[in-house]
Every structure is written in C-alpha cells, then in structure tokens.
Length: 118
Image 1 (tube, rainbow, N blue to C red):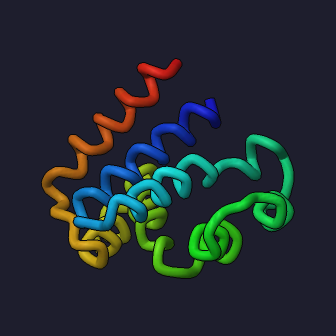
Image 2 (image 1 turned 135 degrees about the vertical axis):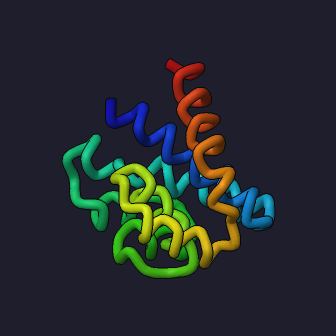
C-alpha cells in the first residue's frame, strides 16, 4: 500500500509541477520527490541515511531530509491534500501558481496512474 501511495504522490507532484509551468527537468524531479517521500517508511530506515546513499539532487535531498528548499512547497501541497487540510493546501497551491479548481482532477489522474501499474 505504501508503494501505491508513493506512486500516487509521484504522479501528483509531477502534475502539479506541470500545472505550475515548471521546467521538464523540475517535473521529473518532482516525480522523484513524490516517489521517494515514503521511502523511509517502506524500508524502515531514516530518510537521512537513505539520502546519503542516493545520487539525487541537493534540492531533492534537502526537501526529503530537512523539509526545506524550493521543492518543499509541492510536497506540502500533496500532503495537505491527502490529509484534508484545505487551508494549507490552498496556501501551497497559491505559492506554486496552481489553480485549485483543477487539483481534484490532477489527483484522480494520479490515482489512475498508480492503478495502471498495479
């Protein structure tokens, strides 16, 4: 189940990046951000230890380990959406320039993406 949630987060982060008009490289990084966001829970290992061994960008590692950096707002939007925190989600969406009206459809697309891989 954690792997499925990781895939949903990966696609949702990527789609949010595309909606915010991020570069193609950043959209790829956002996919990885969502994918690895639950890696510590999946492997039952602290995120800091995992990231020390991974050849990922500093921005990605900073977000996953320290919850800081330029990509953090995307993960914040995803987490707020997942946990039903509309005020926090709207704030994050505003920061990345994504219209909240289309977010439900983006999340459904992410769920469909993850279900195809199952």
